Length: 208
Image (cartoon, rainbow, N blue to C red; front, side, top):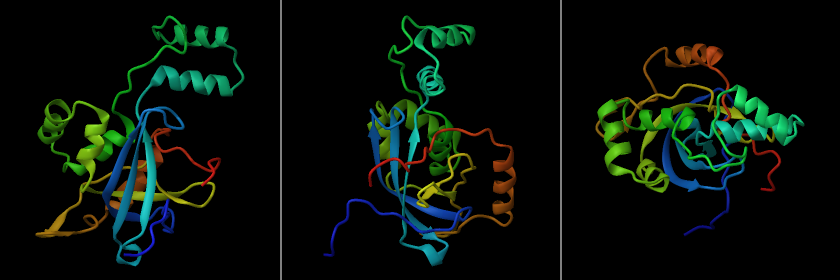
């Protein structure tokens, strides 16, 4: 049966376009950077990296609390942070008030890609089939999408959360192609103009 390991890390060059399947997905309400969904991804293509496992986490949207974290890291005190938030039209009683997490950013783009960019299917998933983010994580297991790799500061392979995501094009029943011709170039061009997001943070300071 083999020997189980606690973590698996792929060794795929950065900026490699890969077809991946979600083999596990976990919602963590208290993640390193707030609520997040961690995806364990099995690489299908290119064939040279088939069987590699990529682990990446994607934050849910909490714009006020994220702004608070960023400003504290910049050295601002709570009074100054409150002033900044008020100037940006955030509504709050205290700057650390709970904020309902919302689906957005890279994780939303992954969801759309997993469901073939079918707006009706995505709407049905989010409105009728999922009541919690745990439900959403479960719904992604077994789904496939196309993404691009990056390397974090520890040289671990991650998903490039700032890049684009694509649906998997089926060549034959049960067979997935990597993408249509020119997709790599289009993705690189899109990434060059994409506003940076913190959906997939580096984990270089974590002990694993």
